[in-house]
Image (tube, rainbow, N blue to C red; front, side):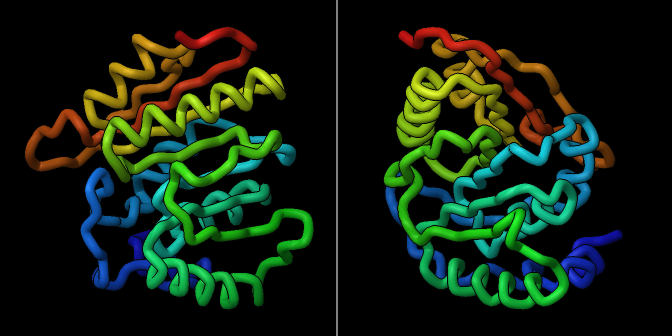
Amino acid sequence: MNDQQYDELLHIQTTEEQKNFQLFANYYPYEPTPYTVLDLCFDQIELEKKDCFVDFGCGKGRVVFYVNYRYHIETLGIEMNKSYVQDALQNKAQYSKEHHLVAAPVNFLNIKAEQYKIKPTDNIFFFFNPFSIRIFRHIIRHIWKSQQLYPRKIYVILYYPSFEYIQFLRDETQFKMIKDILVPNISVYNMHERVLIFESKEKSSME
């Protein structure tokens, strides 16, 4: 299925041109993750009913709805752009007509990523290169502190990752890369066109 067909399946609208993005230092313009990339990524890992998924820089909510539909787990989108959140909530209203969200809720927060307080149940975190390494480091450290208090398996999923993101996770955390998924059919080679999945299973310290 192409992106439009996937949107129709989920009863949402995320394929329109993205507008009304106010530029901020350390935050990058939103772009929806292609559904083909999501299929590639989530064909490689298996999530469980108890998992809780968080998308930082969720835009109109495409990834949030995709994961909720595929796994029937709780999903949350964090987005600083008020206009995008309004669109995401409209999508939620349409999506919820076809899907019962009591056991697996979908939610959105209109806040900056670094303002979100990691919940003890959050354990799957998705990033499509939404902001600078400074903010990314800040959020990963919050995730790590949460794991120390509430030990659990955690996945960090990066699409189109920057070298700085990769270097930080590899050299300054205990996260281990378990999947490196190349996105095929790219006419010009781009080293960033990939999905990396990092995992942490054990309680350990960060520098």
